[in-house]
Each structure stands twice: as C-alpha cells, then as structure tokens.
Length: 157
Image 1: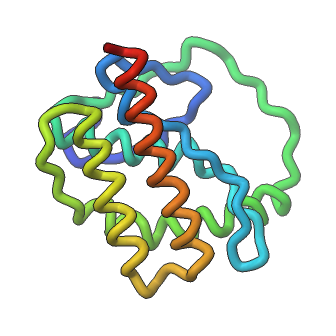
Image 2: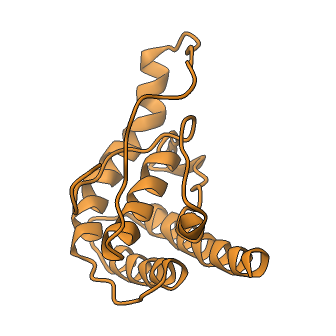
C-alpha cells in the first residue's frame, strides 16, 4: 500500500477500484491541442492522481501489486510518443503543486471529487503559468468530472 500523500501513476490496463471509489475516478479524455501540439497519453495518470487525492483525503489507501494479466506492448516510435506526451509532462509539472495544495473538506467520494473539480478549475484558470488553451482544456476536464459524478450518483443509488 502507498503511504498517505504518496502518488503513483495508475494505468488503466490492470486497475480495480472498490465500488465506493468509482465517483472519483473519471477517465480524463485527452486529444486536445495546446501550443500547436497534441496533448495525449496522460488521461490515466491525471485520473489516477485526482482519485488518489480524494482517496487520501478520506483516509483510504491505494494498493499496488503484480498485474493479473500480461500486457505485451506493440512497438512504439519513441519520438512520436514524446511528441504526444510533451504537453502532458509540462502541464503535470504545473499541476502537481496545485493538486498537492488543494485542501478538501467533503466527507464522501462523490462530494470530495466535486470539491476537487471546483478548486482545480479555480486554481488552474487563475494561474499565470497555464496558457489560455490549457485553461480552456481544464475547464472542459473539470466540467466532465462534475458530469461523471452526476452519472455515478444516478446509477449507483
């Protein structure tokens, strides 16, 4: 198990959550254009970071172990991967301190995730380090996070 406050990338290929955690795990859609380049391949990483923020706040824990399946990767062009991941790297460096500084007060996974979406949107859109395209993208992401919670509330209750 990860210690409280420790974050790790969570990939979507060998991942399981307890049902209660589902409202705080929206898979973030990427494929945006920022600075003339494609933002991609960080959806699982950011989704995992956001879920872990809520899980840590609610005194839950994340366990990491051996995969239950063997994932054989197809060949990748590393330069193409870099081109798709560069903005993810840049934005993650800007996003991590913001995520760490956000204090949550809600007492349920869904309410804490909504609180995170609101505070994340406020902090990113008021932060001078993010360009207008990134701010717009994060408005879209946080809107989708709120919709995800509404959908989870509808189907889980």
